[in-house]
Length: 495
Ligand SMILES: *Cc1c(COP(=O)(O)O)cnc(C)c1O
Image (cartoon, rainbow, N blue to C red; front, top):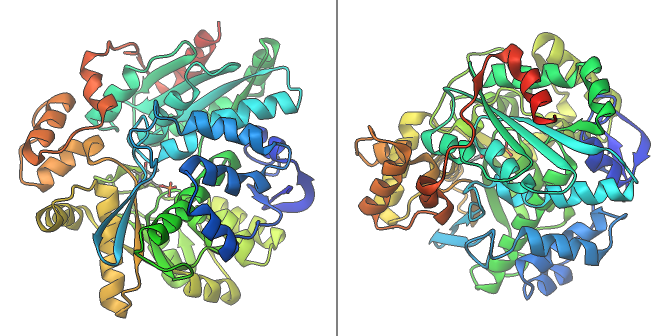
């Protein structure tokens, strides 16, 4: 299977190229030329497989320059007992007969980013070998919290890679910060940037577009790459857990093989829900794709009106991983729904960068209506939902997951459609202790670690081990710089 750019479909790329390049030269995103089919029989056979085996089964057809045994060795390393605290890897947690939380946060950093970022380093380093690339990779990440830690953990001590993560000094949760500044590994660096996420992000973009720096880097035997969710190597592993969840539901007798389930996803960059869309297109019996946003509801408006408009106020919320106004992966959906009209997609994206706004044509709009339903949930409601779910089901959810659950309920109430639904649970509640405790009516004026213990005591639940161990770890990275000093920090790391 080859890959095309969403802005120019004339050239076909091998998977290893798509993964090492990340983004196409024309600024487009790589998409598979065809999607493999999941027949009812293949779903049936996957019911008896482990998560790792399912991952090999699903990913192999997409990676034609890799063998199944290579992919098998990556999945065994990525989804190993050392990394994930449950052998199911992505367990289903039913709370009602027709509502199933898909827990995607049992990996080393307690957020769903691990599902992909444990896999990406294996795909990337193997791609370098296949392409006979001599240079090593220098990965730069600007993070609002979850991506940075998951990327650090995924790339730590991985041969031929260096990774530098920049986070906004005042823009991440206590626990998230502690996770990053105590990061272990010989090839990692972490640095706070004075300012907000946009400052960190713009700083990284400036480094990427500095030709002079790229030349110096090449002289040292490195090229720049990024670990954000536009890389196909991050999206592909996300298709796996939707299929796996479906198989688990069949196996446990909660649905019958072939039965339709809806999927509801707390959405930011549109990566996670796009993976569900691909799974549906491959033949998984998914009904509606429910797109849940917080107060940054640019996607709610887009899906309901067909107009994408980023010219609006940015809100800082208690579900920070969804505080996004430009959802990059939407471009892949537009490419598909337009019947692969690369010129139209390029035109929409040009309008977006020049005016911050574009409207899709009626054909795309009607496809959107059939596939998706969207709504949003603000912070106040999010806290009520966390409290209500805990009260009613004795089950703790994080703010992102609460947003999704609220949107599912909203959909059901509005439409009367009570089809079984999978809700993507994207972070452990312990990662956002302060918001969760405050939702439960508790005080939160304490350190990150104290809050973890307090939540545990209050609810009788066990915190993820890596979070508990944060207290014993030394702070390794206490550097904080101005935006214009970021380049020097990267150069120092590569000395
Ligand atoms: C990244 C993230 C999201 C948003 O996922 P996208 O793929 O960017 O839409 C939602 N919840 C959590 C906890 C996240 O870390």
